Image 1 (cartoon, rainbow, N blue to C red):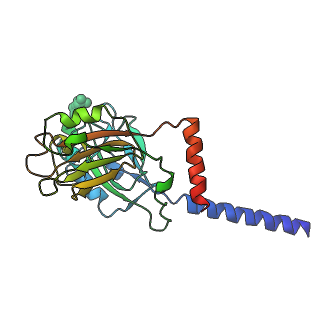
Image 2: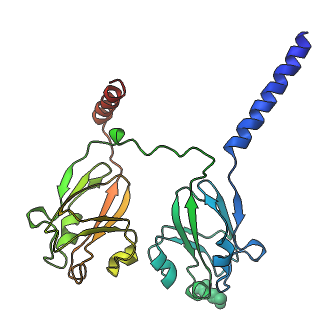
Image 3: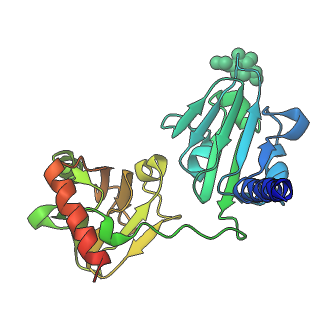
Amino acid sequence: MSTTKKIFGFMLLMITTFTVLLSCCSATVYKVGDSDGWTAKDGMYRDWAEGKEFHVGDSLVFEYDRNFNDVTQVSGALELEFCDSSTPKAVYKSGHDVVTLKEPGYHHFISSNQSQCTSGQRLEVLVVHDPSLPTPPPLPRKILPFGKTYKVGDSQGWNVYDSDFYDKWSEEKQLHVGDSLLFEYDNEANDVLEISGDLEFKSCDPTSPVAVYKTGHDLVRLTEPGVHYFISSKTGHCEAGLKLRVVVSVPKLSPIDRLIRWLRTFRLHHH
Ligand SMILES: *[C@@H]1O[C@H](CO)[C@@H](O)[C@H](O)[C@H]1NC(C)=O
């Protein structure tokens, strides 16, 4: 009797383990370029990526000769188009690199060897959340630190002024996740576009904004660490200096801040 119970218990344990394993590890590993690997072939990676659905958690394996290649992840489509590896998001060089796709959205990979990249060694993949898995909830706003609000350009607001005015303005600021930027301007003369890449920023390219604001009194909450870029889409304004690049860091909390934050979270949860 007790043996039967043990066997039954053991089987139950095995079934549970398998179920957990299966449901946790449905991620797919893709070898980029299949048997050709990561190399220069015109149009090849567009064809390779076509028809594949990449999910958050999947991995890309890049196999190549590391003597004259690498895998450089760049921030945008423009960098990919111009084979610009000057501001990479990440660089891999082992010759056998496994890159896990951790975020949804477009991911761009090139070889930093210019001639290799221009002859086709570049890959763009669109990553989506696996529809069969529950979407992770967005970072709840209430547990973001309670930040400060900065009025962009101070009394000058968001207007064409001096070509390096906004550079200087942002240089003096230490922005943190949870802070906000307030853009004040005449909404008939201007707007605010958040854009994604350094090259778009340098070339004042408004064609693929991440967000567009137009009210003339826009409060933009900085919810993600990293570099954020804002420009005006109005002709000539960005070129004349109406562009802002800010670096947002994760706040270092003092023990007191942590306590206050914890107490606030606690209070919010138990209302
Ligand atoms: C770039 O790739 C070419 C082959 O296409 C190779 O001959 C050259 O040495 C590489 N350049 C560098 C800097 O690795």
